[in-house]
Image (cartoon, rainbow, N blue to C red; front, side, top):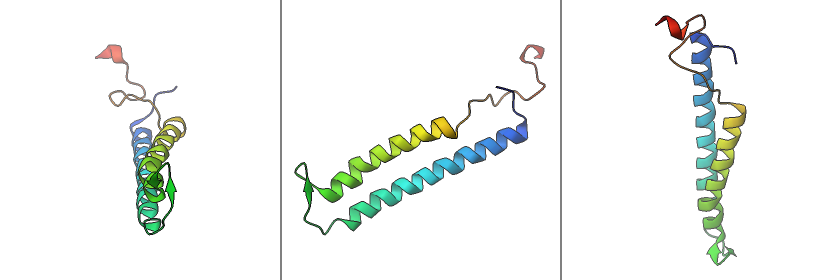
Length: 91
């Protein structure tokens, strides 16, 4: 991987932060949506109310899947201390 400039690093950091915030919003809407949306229904799965199964363990599955996607598609491994053209041995 080629070294990134400071500007490219800042753009990447903003991209990662935005993607993480979007995943948080998705998880929040999932949790609250199923928690309140199905709370009045008399449906059960594995002896637990369906709203709880979809809301609490369900959001965990969504979050883990979302983090896996972010790690593969959005996040980039780079060193914050060095810039393009800097040689570590010069210091």
